[in-house]
Length: 322
Image (cartoon, rainbow, N blue to C red):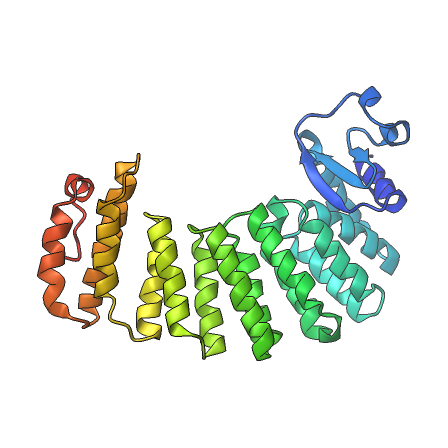
């Protein structure tokens, strides 16, 4: 049985990374001691699941899970199932019960979730993230905050716009990042993430949560930072969305920056004119939004007129605000 090969490989090797294998290699391409596991691919501490055989593996794992009666059998079969399919409710709940019965070690369980998240597809498993959150809610003394934040960044990189990773990070912010020093460190980490991922709305939303938790932040420094990013990286809606948040959070009059952004876009020699038109459109729509918020509303007619002068916008006729 393929399932038995997988169980033996997991008990024999200290696996620290899993992945899917699209094509099974020839036996002579693998180390002698791992050829017996084909079509599974085992090299050192890496384990590859062969995609063509995945349905068979899942079926055999499910059968083994149903037949398990002892705590030992439930522990091993549920481990294999969550490695193959971390969104398997029954297997994950079985492991929760075993942990509460002290049949499984909490530290080992955290390491199992670490292993699950080495596979890009698995890093968006809501059940796995919820299980990790449950573990730390039950045993907060096990929390290694730096490790958890590093995991959030790695999984958000593995799978861009990873909603579950950012939601978990928001939970960490509320429950464990409680000192002003830790909150400031999280603010700086989030700034760095946004600078490297200017289109990622998830990171932008997290920054808003960080600002709300901090309460006090240097308004001028923060606005200089986001304004600089908007000018340096034109055409990215996520950055403009954050400026909208800041306009209400800091109660700003942002019309001056709208003029600055438009002037910068018009004066830039850029190969991608559509990008410059997009930047101008985003700036003007931000200005219209300010007017709708009651900040210098008399400028709305001017903005609507300028919006129609942009070729890109005129072509698609997208002017709902006006």
